[in-house]
Amino acid sequence: MTAGGLAMPFRSGGAGEAAAGTAAGADASGRPTAADRRIGPPVLEVRNITLRFGGVTAISDISFDIRDGEVRAIIGPNGAGKSSMLNVINGFYHPQEGEIVFHGQLRRALKPHQIARQGIARTFQNIALFKGMTVLDNIMTGRLTKMHRNLFWQVLWKGPAEREEVAHRAAAERVIDFLEIQHIRKTPVGRLPYGLQKRVELGRALAAEPSLLLLDEPMAGMNVEEKADMCRFILDVNAEFGTTIALIEHDMGVVMDISDRVVVLDYGKKIGDGTPDEVRRNQAVIDAYLGVAHDDES
Ligand SMILES: Nc1ncnc2c1ncn2[C@@H]1O[C@H](COP(=O)(O)OP(=O)(O)O)[C@@H](O)[C@H]1O
Ligand SMILES: [Mg+2]
Image (cartoon, rainbow, N blue to C red):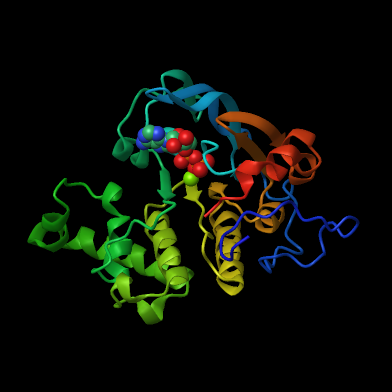
């Protein structure tokens, strides 16, 4: 096993359920239970989705739902179809079979920006920021879906749009305050350490004020301290704004600590779905995680 973002088997702490030191040092202790946090009915339903790339079936007849206000983890070995699933949810990929129901409505095949307007934002497995632009400007790009004109730069800098720009800038500054990155707001993103870049990417997604936030391995490659920070921000977003969160994560300590429910994929199929405790005891899940596919994660 190499360091950094590597998938770990489920914590084998035996008796020490919740309290046993978490790998990420997440400060999830004392977090209100799901019931206390007003978790509601499903906001998004994935129904019998199948997605193929030529001869490769990345996702095979998968169904699950994401409830309003919950933190929903998607886990599974490399190549399981996790990123593809997020790409289906936010409209990057169009599945050959199945349907997505969002807020009770069958969703038509929309373009990603149309889906973003409906309140779904995401971060990527590989950071997708403008490295030469400042933190503030990158976070401003998250406001794009909120802007009324198509031409971003014109809207941003020319006369009649000035008032709109001021409002967007204020929203971006609120995100910056929330994520405690005021001190780097004018720094080009490319100069920041990796963990902070991941936080800026979260900021860009938050700037869109999503109701559903999709995070693809938000803690991959982070050190313990950075992971603890990211966990805290994710839980704070969920608690303070009621944002529903679906995240892909390899660190099982993190998954067990911050998620309300977990869906487990393996080779494009769903092999488990339930609370962290249920999933941890699921034999199919344990087998998948002890299998060979697990050793070459990077
Ligand atoms: N754009 C693509 N074109 C072809 N194959 C793809 C594409 N995206 C993903 N795949 C394949 O789909 C499968 C699932 O990939 P992915 O969703 O990235 O898995 P995970 O995120 O769980 O590691 C893999 O076999 C991968 O090679
Ligand atoms: Mg992936």
